[in-house]
Length: 118
Image (cartoon, rainbow, N blue to C red; front, side, top):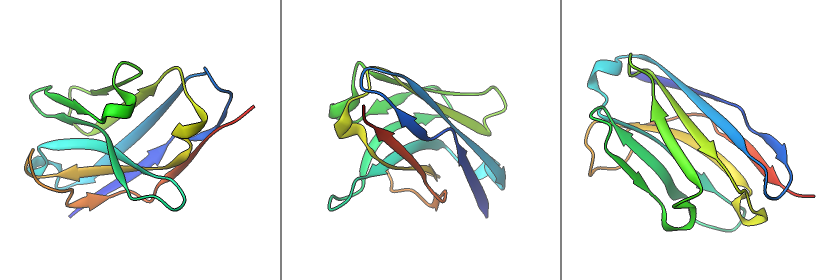
């Protein structure tokens, strides 16, 4: 089993920046990719960003060029750097971890709220 704990959400003004962290514990040796998904009210959960143990990354179209993702050398913490935030980025952000790059997440965090508003 893998446990994921997010931190760093909150309220930010449009154009601002925010960093989310996700700490993984447990059987992290089984994890290939870590990433972030988000879900806004009335919308489906969507991929934000994903990073593999190799450093390979993938981003959702709506955040390309604005968000970056990194992972520490131990492989147990992932960071999402969100820049040029827009009101439409408002959502609950979920950390996710999965065994296979092309698969769906096997583990989820509890979620952290990000609100972009003036």
